[in-house]
Image (cartoon, rainbow, N blue to C red; front, top):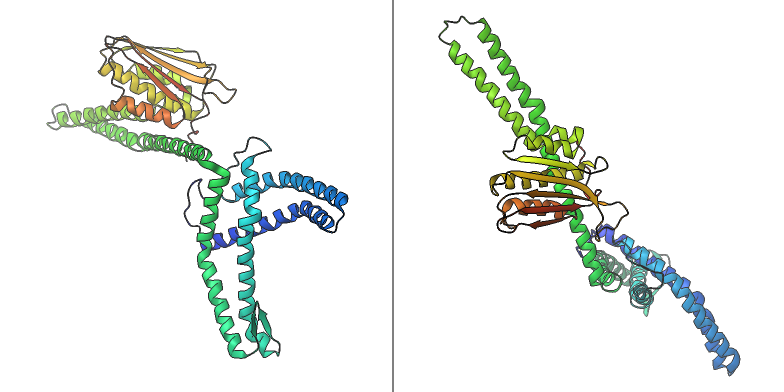
Length: 417
């Protein structure tokens, strides 16, 4: 599907199908509106024959009927056009000026162009068949052009084939022009920008989810692959060490190698825990933050007021955002204590009945946090990508208070392949 506002020329086969669908929509629109136009034409004819009263009555009824049919046809026509061109209907009520304007455009400009294309295609096909018709002893009339001889029929067939090929080449450009017309009349600048913003927000959330998937995949590969191998090496060295004599000169080297393998295994486990803690999947956000607190040089208290577990995507987004805030408090704010509060809240930005989730991190550090720093910018980018909000208040001298607000179902659920 073409994105709103995107006017890349579609493939030729798709363009031909779109042209056919547009022509069919024009025919159906004229068929429906013709029910109202027919009484109007009859009324005008009666009026022209001197029957004023009957003519005015028929004309009035015809205009009323035409208006009613137009209102009934306009919205379905506009909706079908928007869906056919890959745009979501953005109407808020049945009576809409844009759908009526699109009906008028369809009955005039688009119908005229469709009729011209259809007549050209029919004439080209007749011209291509003219040699067969002339050889059979008949003649061919294409508009004012009468074809009675074989050489003339061959010329007509050549022109017909060339015209068909030219229309095929022009089909993507015609569909692109029609798409621009849809944007101008049906979508409009504000709605188009809103649709593009929604698409961008969805794409950013998808990227964040993809990044988290990669983190979890790396964590799984390290946990299931390299960690067992290092443990195996350490066990092998332990077996070798147990079989060596106490006075063996190589024993200290083997003991050192075993200790180094154990130290490397410990470093790897902490690294894996930093990539994606298993406790986050098993026990939730509060438990993961409590485990993270044990690795930090400051006191961290977690006040969990959430009614239950959140979805995987939201828990992952909040965990890494809060982890960055806690790391900043420990490294740069010279804080001694941090309080993390997790709760639900009502927000004016909410568009669903489900309450939003608010995570607040308050430290007793020196304050003065730079919101343009790489760490806080990363936090803001991650939460913004999911449609959330980050507010940071960090006056000089402290304390620093960071608040993260996010809708629980805004983050895509992380699913491992």
